[in-house]
Image (tube, rainbow, N blue to C red; front, side, top):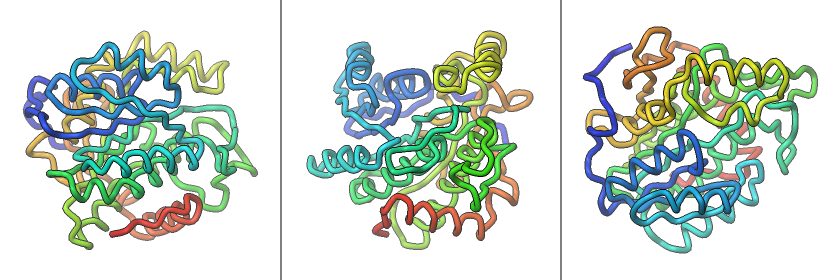
Length: 302
């Protein structure tokens, strides 16, 4: 871990003239990310599964904020969302893959994929691929994929991605968050190899106040998450620092991974993390890319 000077949103460069897409922008980390960009002059596309909640959030933000419906649990919705933006023809400078669900009871997406993997990883994999033509035209374009501390205990069970054999909410949450980091790092390698002027980074917020308990499996899981929110969590605005740093800091580079630099990596200012060999394993990255392409039907046009 490398700890840079204490960075906050006060250090964000001016974003005037830039277009930023944030998934899950109606609450928590996503809302704070939209707010920080809007306050610095960016045009923000706030993606929300619930348009009404999205509009209510946008009403609390300055500047130009467009609200579009995006349900990451349905790849048809992802395609409609992307088609709307592609149809507008405006470049995208930053994509923040922020939305997610956590430790939920087993369910399947509209296309039959386990929901935590489907929403947290596969929906964002598809979205990024579909928006790549707009990102290529952006200025200093970046894709930031948001993971969580749970990546530390994650691995990918390619033989049971659906959880049909054995399902535990926390295990499959960790799998999806592990996949977020593997994907973000692999995407940057592929972009560099193809000479595409887009950087891909990963970030995690530590423990921050979010709506994650609302999507959990309930019972003891929900109780623990709510307890963490009350006793340990830093405010959502501080939790968003790492993804905002990754998205805007001049010193941040593609292929990097940021998380809180405080003790136990749960709180604090952004720090550069050094992924272990499991996250950088080329075979895991290849298998994840191949299965994601197959399940989403989205082939990246590098």
